[in-house]
Length: 123
Image (cartoon, rainbow, N blue to C red; front, side, top):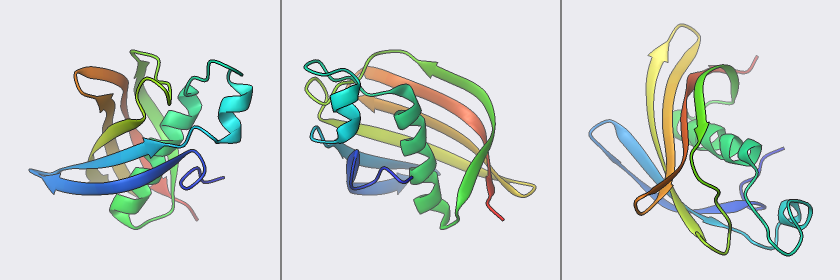
């Protein structure tokens, strides 16, 4: 299930020196937050990884699946109240059958997610 339009929206993006940064706004009315956790919602890590994947799909124009995760560090807890917007920075490098993806999710000086892995086109 795609989260764009439900969990977050993309406000815009730009590319500089081979890295694309998407500015996203978290949507606090999403059902995910009612279950994780009611009254004090936090962004589930799995949803943040899905956001990275969806941004990579927009960047490449391909339907992708995550096939390998080399590093996935959640370095801070994101919440729609504390950080209503996030920057998702991506670098993709073609590899056989897909892309090596390096990503970071951050707001200001706070990094919430560091990701390194591979995504391949879905059959």
